Image 1 (tube, rainbow over the protein chains, first blue to last red):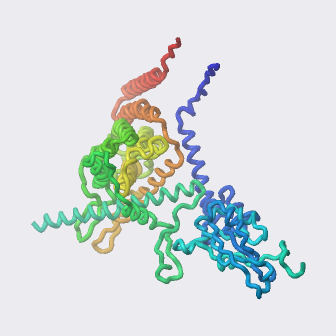
Image 2 (cartoon, each protein chain N blue to C red):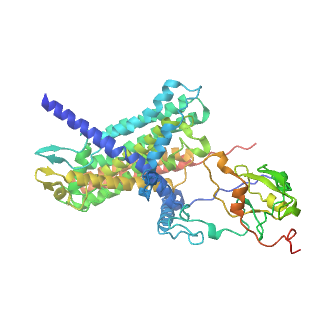
Image 3 (tube, rainbow over the protein chains, first blue to last red):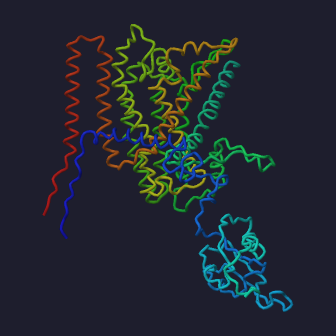
Length: 188
Length: 418
């Protein structure tokens, strides 16, 4: 391999004495400081800053309105427009779930029920939010389009049990989702 | 006997108030400033939440105080952490080292004049713990002891990175102490006194060293003072930069040097022992700023010739001007601490050989020449023109020679190639 001889750049007197660069540095940092105190830092408006630097101050200010369409938050179960729970407890999401966060206990729908022809529904549906990695695979794999990743991101709890979303909680987050799958509707 | 007791009581009161109520809180305060100021420089917010959590007690709103309580929370956290002593350390020195960095920094507080004398019921008391006649020398001699703390910490940790940190800091502090000591000789020659209280009183009467705009008379003419500004500014620069090096602050914080040495000399320390190194560093910074403010920027003096008027303010027998002066001193001190912080977040760290070169080749020589320059300027009014001329020529020749030697020594030897 050829030897490449690099010439160090020759510094002139001003550069050698170093003070000019120092003063330039002070100006740079001080302009940043003054700008961020006045809330005029570069990018402060697009990032919806709190008026100090470019930072948004969380509990008071939230990014919610800026959240993109494809944001993946907490997974939740949905009902359709007729109040039927969409999940038929096929357990595909349970099997696909990479961190094994989902636990489903299937149950048959009794014959007297309005939706008896659906045959199955989850008796229990737990998602351990400590395990969940918000990958969205459950949503992708669901044949009934019953599980969706919503935009909820503030999943907190004081103990482990608080962090397990049970069926009730999941439907509470999910709510009603209209359209898309009409397989089980009377109309069809 | 009651008189002696009275004196003792006054001394203890001064120690308690000036060291533990005035200076020590400045340490966490400067940590807070460091975090907030650096945040603002980097377009962030910084700690602004920790306050009094009134909502816990059922009130509507918390008091944040701009996060001023943050340092207390930090300290509490460090107290509650596990104080771990690794098995491979030299226990005695390992335990001694943190104390050895904090104590010298706090001892030096005792010669710093905080304000003009307070007077009550005809009893006048200077706002300085020990009004001794060797002020700066005392500060240097005690402050240089803190190098033992760092060195011992590095050595007793008995592991590689702390050891390198300790060695680095030893070399660095010893090198810069020379520049530090030499750089203030011109200043002390100018004042003709080593007592810091007298020095500040002089500056209050005849103008600060770097701002001599008032109090001119036959002995202290404006021309003389302006002429002395030249060596004064050189001394100020060398002294300030050397203080940065002495306190291991940013452009010279090679003993800690997170990127190279993990944590430097305090790698093996945890909990409150680590916090003591931190405190020692910040206390040294506070004292360094206090010394710079005292020597160059007029100490407690408000300036513009109103100090005498302020010192005479009184309600009945209580002359409270000293307290105003103390406020002025603390303002200057905090401003200088902010400058320290600004430098930390502006200037990148030096390479070690650059640091040594700066200390030995640039500052040492510059400080030496500055002594002669200052001597010439101080003596000039009493000398004849010829002698001044000869002195100036000699000075220029010596300066040229020094610069030439420095330049020649910089030339790299030719690389021998096979």
